[in-house]
Length: 115
Length: 116
Image (cartoon, rainbow over all chains, first blue to last red; front, side, top):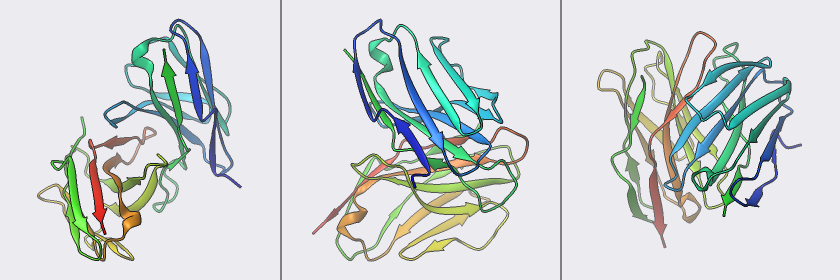
């Protein structure tokens, strides 16, 4: 039933570890996004994929590697986690420009805490 | 580059009263979309209202309405008959249109508290 889902919802890990966050959407959208919300609640885009192709990469450290195995999934893998990576990560999806009424739908967010 | 500015970090209002949240933006695009998102403590991002830049008529959704001034690049949100459940962080956002790289640029948010 859920439109955009993310797993896990919470992730606590040690500095230096590698972790992944998964995102799935069942809306039939062709574009998916990752946004980061920092401790001051500021939301910023990280990546965007359209039909499995990377189209936006907003100067994110290359420790972050998105992967889109198909249109419905966009995963985020983070290597060598740092304290500053602690944040809430939101996945979102959208239809690409076909319908003026479309908008971005957000997942519930994954709260990542790096100790 | 697109920018979105919310000049009110925090606001409060009494239940049943009306409150207006301010937002200004800057973009070089001629066509774009503007949004207000609500983020309650559950942290879910909830779309409140959407406005297409090419439409002159202000969008409304029940108790929520906007005042869209395209020339002034202003997009304020009015909440009428405020309810306790309206307590949340509110984000103004701008999305460019055209091409293949739609992305949302957010303001820093306004924390709204509705008092009983």
